[in-house]
Image (cartoon, rainbow, N blue to C red; front, side):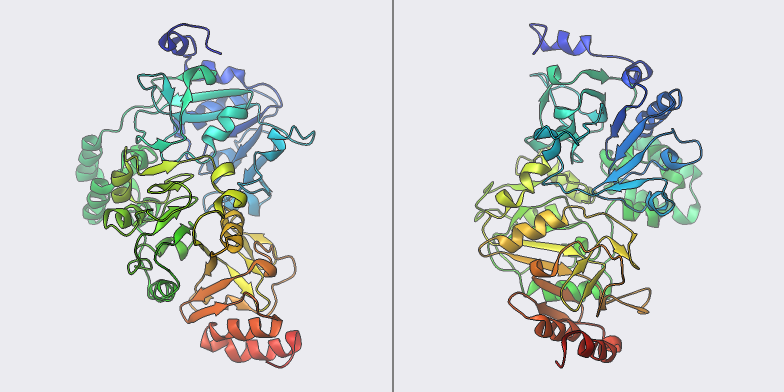
Amino acid sequence: MARYADWRDEYRSRLKGLDEAMEVIQEGDLVRLTILAPGELTAAFQKRAKALSRVDIRLIAPREVQLFGPDAPVGEKEIEIFIGDSSRFATDAQIATYLPTTFMLGMKPFDDHREEARIPDVFLTTCSAPNEAGFIHFGPHMWLRKSYARRCKHTIAVVDPNMTPVHGDVWMHVSEIETFVEGALQRIDKAAIRQRVETLSNEADRPALLRILERASLDQLALVEPNFHLVPPAMLGIAFGEAIVDPAAQAIADNVRQLIRDGDTIQVGVGQPSSLMFKAGAFDDAHDLGLHTELGSPGLARLWERGILTGAKKTLHPNRAVAVAWSGCDGDDLRIINDNPVFELYDPDVLLNPAYMSQNRQMTSINSAVAVDLLGQIASEDRFGGHMINGTGGQPDTHISAAICRDGRAITVMRSTAVEGTINKIVARHEAGTLVTIPRYLADTIVTEHGVARLMDKNHRQRAEELISIAHPDFRAELRKEALELVGSL
């Protein structure tokens, strides 16, 4: 409850310097650090944590490699939902451990007051400056920011002047957040970055860097601003959603296009090749598509601009495109989304709950996989018998939602091979220890560059036949031999 008649007085009473704010972190606390935390926030936290004997950390898709290095704070380091490229070394080396959960169940232990649940003591996040009514939001990369800010014992919110205005259920009043920090983050100066690129960057990289700079949003630039001119353009392109559609991904998109119906409500996952489906034209022939998804992909907002993504036939949030975050979109998409009320964000435990999401008309999910076995077991988190490369992400939530939707379809897309054609991704059996993300009884439709396998209402032999037909031709003969032992004569 507010202590002051004017929210501005309330807000001023909660302002602290960054180092002073960190003093709320105490010995043995569990600290939740927001996704895409700015370096200033991470450095201040690390300084405070190292002054204590033990601090436990919870993260999602962390980029903060310093928190896993030899100079890192002492304590448990756990990664929930998604590991990501930057921190995979930490789980490989068992420096960090994985917290198996889903978006639909992530907040349930806290809300049910389970005795085994451990609510983070302190949540460190960024937020917008307050609006005229005294409300802040968490920007296009909201994810779990609002969810944790509502539940954690202490929240420290660093005001980020670079946040893109967003719409949806994104607001919290300043009286609901314990501590704010102003001045730690500065507004991005694109002109200054351009000058550094033009004078200090590798000359060969300069044209590409300038092109990326022109398209990038302030949110994107804030993540790399001090070193933008030194980062290889290829790396920046990937980070900023400028993915290239390879021939296999294009063929997959062409196959997906045949499955998309007018009026579908679509969800598209962040993995490869699913995130390429917008750019590869998988939805270009459809009309009145809706969007109800976890996050963005390059080309998503331009589909709305072209009149294909209208939401006119959606059951939930009609005429709106809804997500948990707009991470994954490129700069052109983010410009369209900027302060656009058609695009709304919501908490993931609500938006991605299958009991809710499955109510959509023709809910159609599209997610990627690492491997699928001949019975239809889908592995999206690991390869080679339990070696994790990523977490579940939102795949269980969104796949189940589409699978149980009365007229929905759960599509899994993947290239048929990996490592330049040397590894087959359709296998007779997963290796021992493989983490199965989607069990065979929930498998629906599998798509590779070689075709479409429809698994629903198919027995084991029929599934094997379907999957072998879309495997790479180089591996089909061996798969047929292995299928004979596994399911009998095809």
